[in-house]
Image (cartoon, rainbow, N blue to C red; front, top):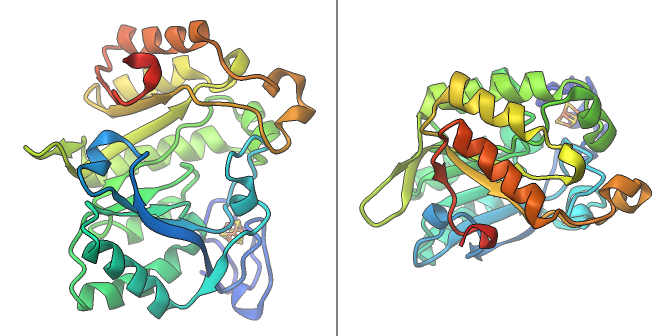
Length: 283
Ligand code: SF4
């Protein structure tokens, strides 16, 4: 896949093994910006000891409002070997983390699989979280069937023109919906044990954007009618302009309480009642 890269739906066709770079900017290396227990993730991922996050450098999306743009777009991070990546996973397990949370993994799935093989052979047994922007190909997801325990994709947009303008991809909605159906087919609705910790299933993130750019109405319709009304959903209110968002006047402000309330009302009308409660707007 890396020789004529089709690791993600962009299908750049570059030879990453020969050092060529596609839209995600990375060759045949893995770069990580940071790793450690993280307490800001969704409540069922955090528990008492945190979610064991590994933040991969670069991304297959080019969101102009990315809050982590220094990592996702500008390449902040250091190169790690497959051995090094496996050791990070084992270190997080040793620290008591509830899971291994792979943040922006899409463009480095082949490398993650090699590292996982090493880590599992050395005792890694935690649930594996695939935390992506939701622009994942079915071919890659099928490789992950039986390996990933918890899928946590974004549903960023319902409108492909907006997706192209804001994230630089042509067919986000179609790819995203197909990916989410496949993820749900593999792992089902989110299962939470009696300690409140997620063990398996699908968790969707949806960031509300100004002026309805995120297409919340269609996102919740799709989830309720085509995936499952029992979908665990985090409707996020924390949008604030950064990176190139200031170039676009309509993205140059945070969202208001009214916009967020409308998004929540849409989820409730569709009877999507498993909403993430750690959102400050919902308390
Ligand atoms: S993983 Fe990177 S190089 Fe490969 S198709 Fe996607 S954006 Fe292009």
